[in-house]
Length: 578
Image (cartoon, rainbow, N blue to C red):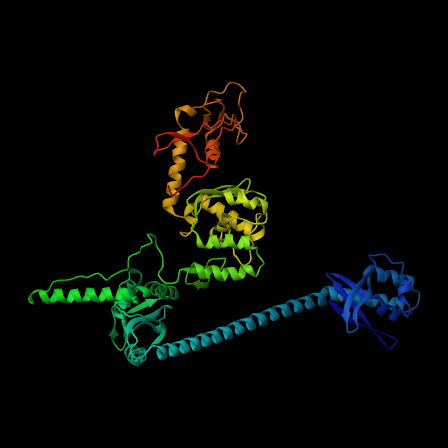
């Protein structure tokens, strides 16, 4: 805080600049020198200590400038060294000024500064609120203009006998919910004026051109998730509607539109249309054959095209690409080929080798599934059990250092000479299971950064709850078959031939796999060398593909082949398609 006080002596006025730091006053040395008549005050205070003078920087028009200020102690020292008559009245004046400011002025100035800060903050908040209101108003006006333009474009596009199912907004209610009309017509442009007169307003926002428009409309109105939102109160001029007007939030509207998009192709297919017409004709003939005095309830279910793939799928476009958070749809492709070609163009732009591109193509066009996952939080390592395109099971592992490996023949054989490439199974885990972006994450045998975090997180989540894996990377039937095969091996190992011998003193006191004491946990024994090992460790040993004893290396694990009736060793690769 700067304070300027005038010192008057012999009719001459001197301005003395004072700077307050907390409760300590500082006096500008040059102003004090002018009062005392010192032409070079710097020489007089050159020997002063650090607690008697300070240097303060200030911004001026000429740039940053440093000024010397005297503390209260330094000022009194300078006055005691000065013997001119002006020194005594100046010393009294300084004492009076300091006492006056300490009692009154310092508090008033600080209070004024605080009030000024509060006033600035109030003005800033009021300005921000006004800007937010203006932006919200402009956004609402812009959205209304967009909705009006969409309404006009839709009613001008669907006319002249084109059968459609339309969604229209009637009005926004006080509770923030919209009244939505779902209907069908063969000339939308001709129908809209009647809707405005009947319901008091109508703004079309979604249209589905379908051949069976009335059947599709009936399907939507009776859908369990839509029918419960029916609005049965008065809409306009005493008019009520029990089945065609619905009260919806924005989330309900989006849900209804998504339902319509998924099922519209089933009501626009030529084969479906022909079968529905045949069903209607049969119902008409049945009604003609029944005596007129009877009124039977004939229910004919509408045709739903059978699903030949034996798994749930959406009709229409099949491949959708989402953002990393999984919330934003980036692009939809007609099929795997188009998605691969688009991805190939992006990947070729990143100068990937032809060998790596071929493996990425197989990852896109072949079926892979995750059968089992394990993760160790202590070492931050784990592995995925992945079924290949032929049903063989391979292990895609990740260790604590980020090394990304696989035990498939491609990785062990051909790729051992090309260490910078990764196999299709690792591509599957990296891009489909962990959902890394193919545009930003390069295929590499050592993961870093965001790719390493995403793969570890996917390992951690799926090892605790396998349902966190999406349906396109995890098949329950294959997972159950894999568990059945591994369970048969576990059942064999739990038999009497693998009973562990008793521990004698310090003999075999450590497990050959985990190196912990064998005194803790369940134990099994090798039928040949009779050495003990933890049961859990042996399970992990078998699941990792090892077929020999950790001690004597004998092939002691055999299982009965149901086809030949003979015993055979557990194969290194398990096939879940058999």
